[in-house]
Length: 393
Ligand code: NZQ
Ligand code: ZN
Image 1 (cartoon, rainbow, N blue to C red):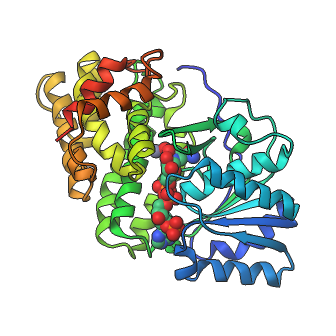
Image 2: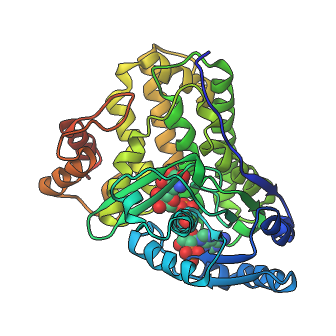
């Protein structure tokens, strides 16, 4: 087995009625003045925000709420929210939402702990995060896994650059996870989440390092579970069993448990982040387009690994390793399409791009061909352009 470190400190309350523990968890984790962040209004419409605010009032916990975090959240909004939180003298940030709200909350929490440093230092210039205020989460969408992850992804306004800051310090202190809170999600958004959850494990699994057997078994089981319950969740959003299986898989898939000893490749994420940064497309949808294209381009580097995955996850047990690899990639693409996800640029809603558009994205992805993107098959600018071109229809 390969060596690894595993640090996942998030205190999780999972299941029906989990939100009833919110006030207790805030106190337990040191909050007394809470800066509550939410998104574009779904939690106002479905009543979740009101329910939480009532509880905080009853518990005499002082709070200030701020809405308006947009999907593919931008740095400038996080800066505004940080100023508000500092002004309020908050000692905890509570995210009520999904990856976009949680990632913004992480940035605000770093800003709160470092009021003399602009958060662009961390998200634009790569300064190391050394301190962070406590972060709580009430999760309303199963997808990004930010409720337990070490990352926060923000788009730098006007540049098309979407990038993450990473540190164990920004893993949330607690997460309240009631699957019923996801019942109001549109099917497209559920499908985006299912793809993202599947990818967080698959992008750890496809690797040249493969001797952590238990990690493989956990990863394969998670991917099979996501295929099974993902289909049900998209068709029946109020199916508690499916929504709860997906929700828990979402956290485990990105807290690193399914990649111990291997690290992350995340090539499709890198290709997809550029698409989201430039064209503001949903994260999960960008991955549905990019992963099959990337896998088709690189599987011959190690067909045995793709074949093992195809066999264990998709039940493909006939043919050469190359044939099994191709079958697994085809089945994954079909799965994404059955969920209603796009697998080309046109279906993603951005049309057919010009050569100049493709080159611009490849430049962002590889910093003008000065770095290689991804680990399994480090991609230069030409590789990135070829992969984008293969789905440019
Ligand atoms: O903004 P509101 O009105 O709340 O609507 C949201 C948003 O439009 C809606 N929604 C959320 N919960 C809902 C709901 N609608 C109805 N009912 C509910 N219960 O869903 C839409 C998408 O929300 P968002 O937070 O953007 O989704 P997701 O959780 O997929 O997060 C995506 C972001 O996370 C980043 C992505 O890049 C993207 O910016 N990621 C963060 C990661 C991390 N921090 O570890 C890892 C991921 O790989 C990913 O990069
Ligand atoms: Zn993701």
